[in-house]
Length: 360
Image 1 (cartoon, rainbow, N blue to C red):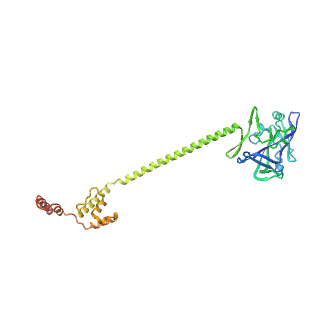
Image 2: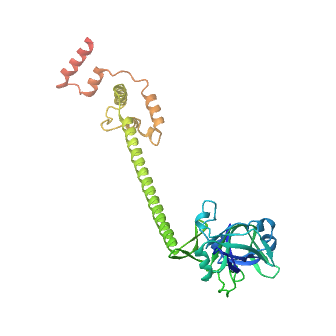
Image 3: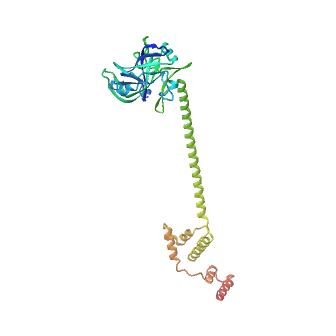
């Protein structure tokens, strides 16, 4: 993680060329306080971060101070070879030593605006560095509680700031120290005066101005609105597809039903023949049976009478076939005699029917 903390500059002097040189206490051991959002824990208001001596004074950490750039306030990102020309106003020397609980380094300011800023009161310094931050509760040898520990500290740059986290012990020059605190450091770029604040964006701490926060909040609102609109559109589209699928399925079912009801010529002939056979057999068993408007099954049950009561269709079919199995083709003469009374006007009809039958 990238961190910043501060220290004073002492013993400033100007060289013949107008540069300012000094020795400063650049960093210290002990507890420094950060807001939770600064260290990736927005759920905590304040985090006490412990910088143990073995981390601050390790050989690798001490060596990382030498020949690093000096900046006016902290840049948005670490200084690199690509940004050094635009950001650097001076340089840290290579004679890095331990001074009690502090790290002392020499620095030189070559930029006139930076020198004037120090003369006008911007006297504290703040180291920009990266480290491994472990969240673990503990108590320092001095009895102070902490929630996190810094290890593997590596310096990136030294920044001149109005007020630093390390306090008034880390200052440029010998004038009185300002009040300590943890407010964001003002940044001056030409005539602009801004104050950085830290917010959490997608789980990551981001330093920005009030205008930046407003812009981020607006973008968050637009994204939320866009997400809601997209969700609504997806839901509407899904519902429309489901309705269309249901409509198509209903039409397919209707088509299948109509196909089942369509009878081709051969099937129709078979149905007619079956119907004629059933009617003929039923009439042979019961000449008075009613067939109009009756289905084949209903005709069979009517002929069988009580024998078909409460029986299945399969039983009725079998009983009807069994009962009509021995029926002989109808005799026209017998049917004529049966249908007409003898004598009277029907006698001639009977004779004609008999004669016709004999000729056949």
